[in-house]
Length: 99
Length: 178
Image (cartoon, rainbow over the protein chains, first blue to last red):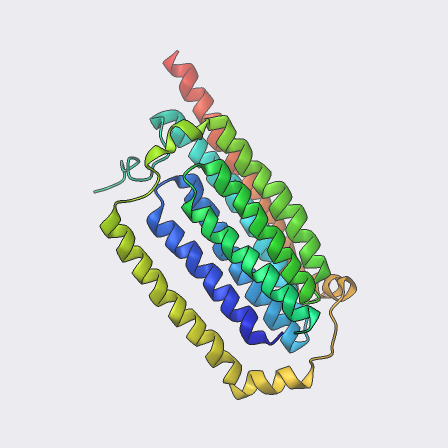
């Protein structure tokens, strides 16, 4: 398959992630959409790595995965503590920092 | 159509449908399970691209570790009953979808444009046949990218300490209340 089709698929997956962040108000689903966006970027990395015949792109994917794992651990810990204080994870109701 | 094209269309369609399911299901558990489907389809795409090691890591780390964490938190918080109004109102939703369509057009335009760039095109024809193996990745990771690799370990350590602090401070606060 040409590089083009992989990049288009990656762009579409990224867009679905962005739309998910915009339309959903559940913090956990927003987190999942961020994972979707990171995965779309990974797909573009691997596709371009293949077409350039270089493995560097795949090394970056491994770094992205490590950062995503750290991010999920911290984010879910924050969600759990927000839920314990507020009894909700709806991001519209968690607005104490709003000016 | 050759088998590679059929597999690409299959995995691509499954990952797109899974991604749409993630943002449209009301219940977070269904979203998480759809996300796992998307991750598996993307692992298939990685195999098609010849990135076998990345595909294995995708399944072990993403579909395994990260999604188990998600499911664990959803079940721990028992979110199914609370998430009745998970989405925003109709007008804002339409606006968000229009913005998304615009972003998709933009992304596809950039993807098509990038291919017609002469630098990328020449590189593509020059080294199409080079295959990347786990050996090559390991060699790159521990030579050229050794410093980022070590920094990654610091990030993981910081995440570990951060999570412990978040949970610990909370239990102290609870003790003070009692």
